[in-house]
Structure formats: C-alpha cells, structure tokens
Length: 243
Image 1 (cartoon, rainbow, N blue to C red):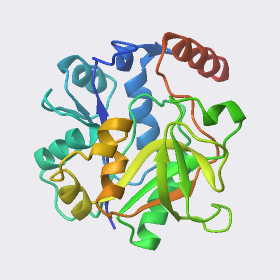
Image 2: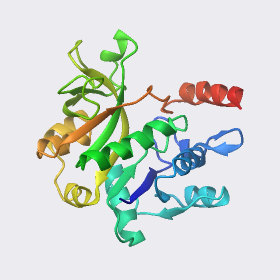
Image 3: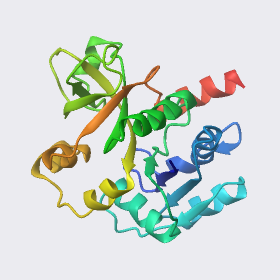
Image 4: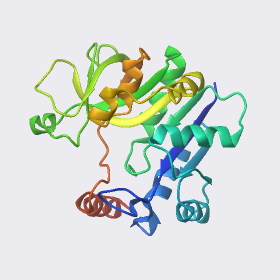
C-alpha cells in the first residue's frame, strides 16, 4: 500500500500572517513539519503551497514543494490539485498534514497510516483526550464525538465534529490530520460545500453530510498548533529548549 503525504500551506493566515515562514531553531515552521513527515518513512512528502516564498524556503531546506492555485476554498482542494500535478501512479492513500503543527508526534502519523491500511478506511483522522473542561467551550479547539471509546475501539467512527460542546460520552480533542483513500479524495472534492460545513467552518462535516465514513485513531496528545503570536512564542520556547 502506497501513501503520499501532502502538506498544504499558505502565507495569508488571518490571525498570524506569514506563519509558515516563522522560524524556530533557524528553520521555518513549514520545513519543521516537512522534516517530521519525512521521518515517518511512510511515503513521499510534498508541500503544496500557494506562495512561491514557501516553495523556495522548503526547497532551500532540502524538501520538496510545488506551487498550487491561490483560489482554493479549502486545504483539501489544494492537496487534490497537488496530487493531480504530481501524476503519481498506484497511490492508495493521501495523508494531509497541517503545516502549522511542527510538534506533531511522528508515531501518531505512522499509527494513523497503519490503521487506514488495516481497516481499508475511507477517511481517517486523529483525536486526543481532552485535558481541560474549558476546552469543551473553546471554539478554537475542534471536538469529535466517536461511536465508541477509542481505548476499546482503536479506529471508531466519528459521529459528529463540533466547536462547542457540553460534556459528552466519547468526546475528544480533534487533531486536523486526515488520511484519504485516493478514490474518496477524488469524490470528496467534487462535492459542494455543505450548509453544516460553512456554518461551522469545518470541512470534515461535508464528508459526514454525504455519508462518507471518518474513522478516528487515538493520538498520544494534541500537538500545540500555531494560530497566534502567543502560540508561536510558546512553541518556539519549548522546541528550542528541547534542542
């Protein structure tokens, strides 16, 4: 089974413009993510960027990157364009890793890929245990409710994704990494954005609204994503201390 990893990236993030090129240990965030993905050894890794500066940076740091359109509504549209540009044969799964999580756990990515192969799943993603009650009402932390407890059922189906929630059974902190079977990705990008997806600003709801199954694997922890200046400075401190 062949997996291709694509990391979508763009400079025009609303809350932290220029985020992919911010440096930690003198290497850009996007190149850190590329290196993490490469270390998994599960397949070829490509950054799909809408800005030439990102492409240049990744290549300068020894990675592979291609330029994609700046008209895409979602990261999935971007990874599909990159997949088409690459014209690779025999790809079974396409893994979409967020370009702003340089602290993602390598073993979690390997585990998700293995689960996709074992279960022949349509879409797979990761979730971690919720650490603080306050996370339930924090709209920046996306939650997923699964059919079964992930410790009993290691690749349970997602019932619902939401931004705000009361305490619920089998509720987890969703981590925005997706693995698609190549066939499902091709079908997914043809679907119109659903009302649910637009209202909640959650692309994965389009899959559930169209009866595409999403399975969830338990991650060791939720990585610190970089959405704000504070996130960046906090993560920079941790990563530079560890090195």
